[in-house]
Amino acid sequence: MNQMNHYHSAAYPVPDQRGPEPVLFLVELDPQRVVDGVRYDENYLADDVMACGTMRETCPICEEGHLQLVLRQKNVRVAHLFCIECTRCFGAFLPDGSPALAD
Image (cartoon, rainbow, N blue to C red):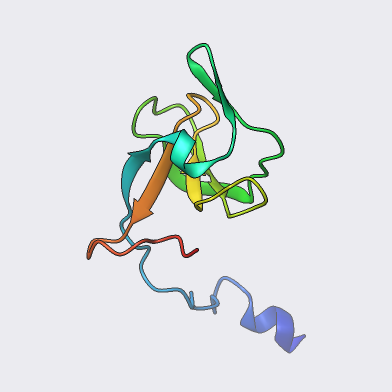
């Protein structure tokens, strides 16, 4: 029997190396303070903003989808979480009040 298969079988699961998932508190941010862009009608438009991935947190406003992680870039001043459904920006904080997203 192949030892590699033996140790990764259901009888011997690989222990999860991560700790418990931290609780994040989300605070809505003004997009004009977060991203360089322009206000157009009721929307704020910004060019060339790239999301880095989808988070487990869902939007607390529209509750439609998972938030996208946006790190600092050329025209992004503050790392934040973004809802693609309702186009809102959020800061993420740990229970002690410290920022969960480092700049």
